[in-house]
Image (cartoon, rainbow, N blue to C red; front, side):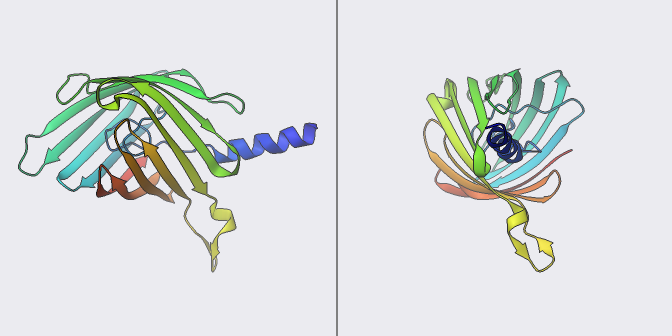
Length: 207
């Protein structure tokens, strides 16, 4: 029995993300949705997403234990630009047996739509991870998502391991979004997918 529990623990830990990545809206997370992940002390996350009607540059950092603060600068074609300030605080860290919990606010200055939320994240065996939360503003109630990480150890091309790729599906309170996040080198990720009925591509780096 102990061997079985140990094996399950290893699978769960192996499926947990090593590096957080910013969502399109700035906070660390999936595509549109935040996760319960918060940048650790000394970590900084930079990102850029190209959208149909413009682009968004992102900067996040850890400013205190369990507290992440960031800015997302939206630059639109033919529309007013917007800068959103976001904050997220981790209430409970994720463990092998229990989910991580976090609360946060997007667009603190209400330049677009201030949105408060609470979210839980939990790694599962076989590279799956689930997220679920509730919020107001743009979330409009319940939001949720699931990730599936393809293990690079099991997919080989010649002498090189295929980059770890995470497939993402989420419901952001209004739309279903789909994407893929590829880890090129530790911390550097490329994103592409379908968001709010349009395609997007992005790149991010977390130290």
